[in-house]
Image (cartoon, rainbow, N blue to C red; front, side, top):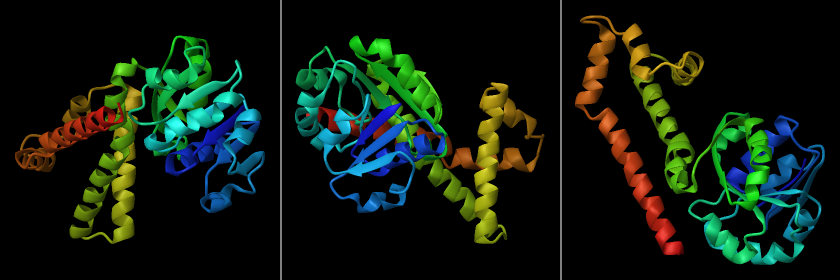
Length: 266
């Protein structure tokens, strides 16, 4: 596949790393106004770094848009004349709807909207995607790209805001939980490196159990909670302090914020 990533910032670069790592490209064009932050990818095979978006678009079949929302309309107008019938446009822009992109490019363009997360850099992204009517013919192509660097779910566009909170912002939420576990492990006597390893691999194991077994989390919790035991004591104390409710309230607050951002853009 010949792919361009317009706006190779944090997410765009993560996508690039994942695609390179999984050998999912024939050629990859990365664009950015300042290329210095991409210097570590300069020697990668079949990767081209450029400040010119038109050069990238003219040499690929699939275009990832990964710029800041405030820059997207200008980028769309800039590349519009270079777009061909066969171009698949994949937007990762938070809060920027498909109809709004169509208002600039036209409904005859194949547009897929995707919300991956930064774990795409290590092939572990949870990506939600949707498309316009024209883009439905290429939805499987988009899925295959994201499945090569993680897991993909197709959802209605109306759920994309929520998906952003759960999956993209969710990386930060889980990082904070892992950090808290690390801090607790240090307080319990482990050094910092050991504490982080314990936290990281235990969280990975918990997720892997659910992925492999398909169980509800409470089923796995029941396996490690015994009457009057230390696990249920710890869980109950966490719930008394509002662990679950705080996480839920934080995610709802994040969702409200992203909806406000969308309203400001409209």
